[in-house]
Length: 106
Image 1: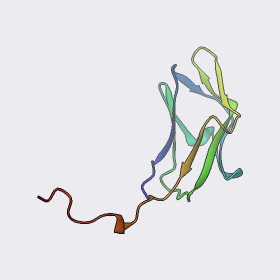
Image 2: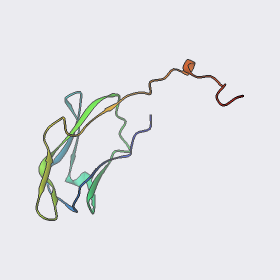
Image 3: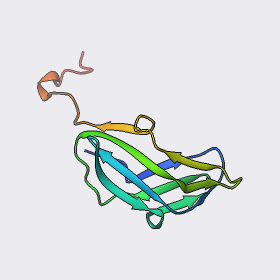
Image 4: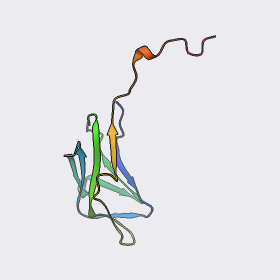
């Protein structure tokens, strides 16, 4: 399974890092917690390195505190609704018996 090496969020304005937490939930249970010390800001996006994490299949969502991320104009961003930033990790759904070596053979 190849997963991204980072959590990344892009905004429509440049952002400033504040104080707070970003939490990742799996199946509705707290799975990972990151603080401002784990977040890198570059212009209008932030990243969190997750290259050493090995998440399993499941339903996930991400929440983060108001005040953790602020625009350069003072707008505070947060995610407090589990339906906003959700995703699912699944194994590929195919069986090797579904394929043969006759593809593109005349």
